[in-house]
Image (cartoon, rainbow over all chains, first blue to last red; front, side):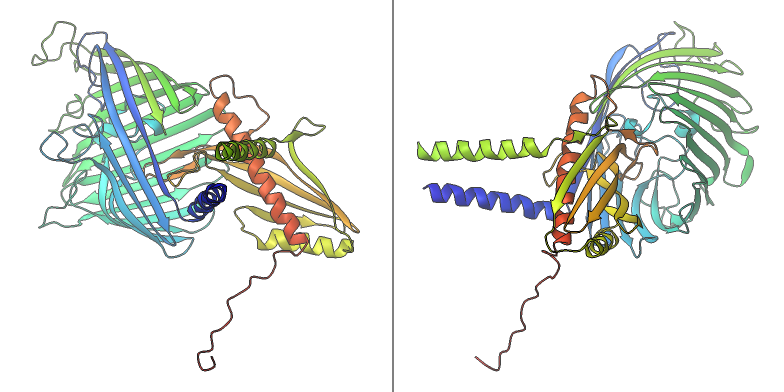
Amino acid sequence: MIKKVTMMAAMAAATVSFAKAQDTLQISGSVDTYFKYDFEKGANIQTSFASDHNSVSLGMLDLALKKSTGKASFVGELSFGPRGQLQSIPGGDGSGSFHIQNLYTTYAFTDKFSMTAGYMGTFIGYEVISPVANYNYSTSYLFTNGPFQNAGIKANATLSDKIGVMVGLFNSEWNAYSATPTLGLNNFGAQISLAPIKGWNAYLNMITGSTAGTEFDLTTAYQITDKFKLGLNVADYSAAGDSDEGFTGGALYASYGAIGVRAESFKSKAVSSVVYSGVVADESVFALTVSGNIKAGGLTVIPEIRFDNGSTNMFRKSGTLPTAAPDSKSASQFALALVYAF
Amino acid sequence: MKIIVTVLLFVTCWNTTYAQDAALAKDERGKYIYYEVVEAKGVARATLVQRASDFLKTVNKKLVSFENASDTAVAGKGTFMIVLNKSVLAHPSGAVHYRFTAELRDEKYRFWLTDFGFIPFARDRYGNFVPATTFSTPLEKSPGKLGASEWKKYLESTATQAKSFGDQFKAYLQKAETRKTEPAAVNKTRW
C-alpha cells in the first residue's frame, strides 16, 4: 500500500512537471463594479460606461483565453455584463449571445513578422474597453466615439527595436463581427509604432473606409519615472465623403503613483449631423477627470471625480427631464469603482 | 496508519524543502542575492571561464545573456518570468530582471545573482500580457501592506528560479548534462 501511495505521489509530481513543460493555456480576466453619483441627479455625461446614477452597478466579467503552440497562437476574450455587452459590442443588447471582445489567431512567421486575423480590439486610441488597462474608470469622448474593435486581417512587422509597422484590411463597419457583403474588407488601417527612448512609445494610427470614414490618431505615453507618467491622445475623424462632418480632440493624461488626471478637449465638426456623446455640430466640451488608483493585490479601487464643461448647453440640470432640451453647460459626477484583475 | 504517516512525512518534507528554497539572502549592500561557492576538483580556471562563457552564450537568451568576460570572471544579465499560479491555467504576473556574475579560480568558482528588479505585466487591448512599465522596482523595496502578499510570492518565485538557474549553471560547468542522448537507430534487417 505504501508503495502504491509513493508511486501515485511520484506520478502526480511527474504529471505536474510535464504540464509545466507544455505551452500552457492562459486564463486571465477581470471583474468590475461601480457606484456613480451625478451631481445633477441624472445620466448626464454621455461617454461610455459608468452610466448609472446613484446605483451600485455592474461593469463586466471579462474572461480571456490565450494559447501558443509553436508559432501559432489564439486569443479569445469573452465579456458578460453591461460594459462587455450592450455598451461595447455589437448585438449585445440581448438580441443574441454576443460576448466576444477578441477572437483572433496569429501566426508568427519570424520573431519580427506576424499575421493576425479575426476580431480584435482596435489599434486606435489611448483607452480600451477593459477597465484594467485604463487609469480612469470613466472614459474619454475620443474613446467613446472612436472604434472599439475592428475585424479583419493585419500584418505586424518589427523593423528595429524602435520602429514597428502594422497594415491591415478590416471589415466595412467598426465594431461589427461581419462585413456588409457588398463592401467586404474596405477599411484600410495602418500603424507606425515608435519607441525613441526608454519609457516613451508613440503610435501613429490611421483607418479609412468608404463608408466608415477616416480617423487619424496619435497615441503616446512617456513613463518619465517609476511613478510619473504622461500620455497624450490626439485624433481627428471625418465621416465618409465629408471632411466637415466628424470630430476632433485631444486628451492629456498625467499620473503620479496613485493619482492621475485626464484633461480632454473634444469638438464636433462644423456640419456634423451626428451628435457625439451629447456634443452637437460646431460645439465643444472640456472634461477634467481626477482618479485614484489604490491597489491591493489584484484589486484596484478607483475613486474618481469628473467635471465636464460645454461650449453650449449640452447637459441637464437636476429635475430636467431626459427628453427635454439641455439646459446646462456643465456636469459633474463622482464614481467609486472596484476592478479586480486575475 | 502507516499510510497517513507516510503521506504526512512526504508533505512535510516537500514543504520544508520549498521553504528553504524560497529564501534569498541579503548582501553587504542590503540587496537580495543568490550566492554559491562551488568546488570543481581537477578543472583549471581557464576551462571554467570558457564553460561559464559558453553557458551564458548558449542557454535560452530570455533567461540570461552574456555581457562580458575576463580571465577570472564572467558577467551577464537575465530575466525570470513570474507566473504565480503554477497550474496549466497560468499567465505571467511580471518579470524579474537580474545581474549574474561568476568568479572563477583553479578548481573552484563562485557565482551570484543580484540586483533583482520586478516589472509588473498587464494585459493589453489584444489580450496579451506585456510589461506595464519600463521601470523595474527593486525587490528590496517594500510594497506596503496592500501589496505585501503578492510581493512575497514574487520573492519566493525569484528564489526558486535563481536556485534552478544555479543548478543549471553548476551542471553545465561540470559538463554533467552536455550531451543529449538520441535513441539508437533501429535495424530491422537483423534481429
